[in-house]
Length: 272
Image (cartoon, rainbow, N blue to C red; front, side, top):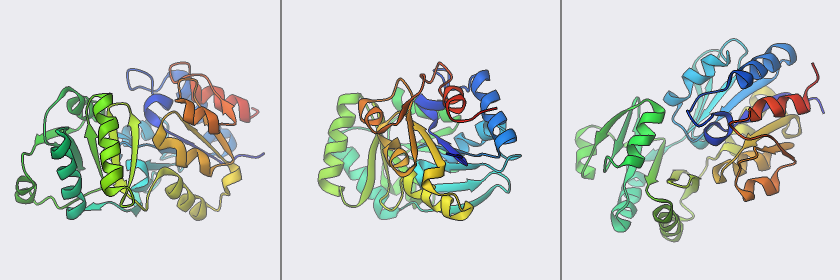
């Protein structure tokens, strides 16, 4: 198969434990774009603000790649820096997540521009702000957000210990299961986004824009929020450190995120 597009998750897949891209991965990704004309897509739960620096490192602006941020809530054309698709959460949605967060006593966050707003500055919340290189502002009530003029976001997260996140997932699904896209991306992160978006749905939109069929796509992932992405493409790939659910739907198991999983994948499916 002549693959025309590679979409990859970031944390736990493309990025190593220090949240960097290994030199081997960088070289392989630039090479496949330059020599094979492959469209490269960063598909992450991360906010776009925390993805653009990586996209530039991979020369995706030069080779016309795309950033698929917020689990599919936003799609950016790196050549033009244009947001070509966006679908997020409104004021009522933020209120719904806030209520669940308070009921189970686990903090929530949301994203606006270069700032993360959160109900508490726990280690998990500050870890997210740090890895995204974003500012942090605490808010205590919904009225606090209103005073700041915040009435929409692209994604919310509930952040806690793994056992708390499982409780949060169960609670969100019970109360709002049909209202939102709800998925655990890391054991400490529960992601809540618009129900009309996930990584797979937004990749489908991109495929229609670029006239690339699902069977001409490769997707690489490791976590539950990558499932829609891998289910959509012709060649679903799991890194070695992926959860069992992702390995089960993969047609190829690559090396781990710290063993240049993207380089291994590219060498498996492309001849140079």
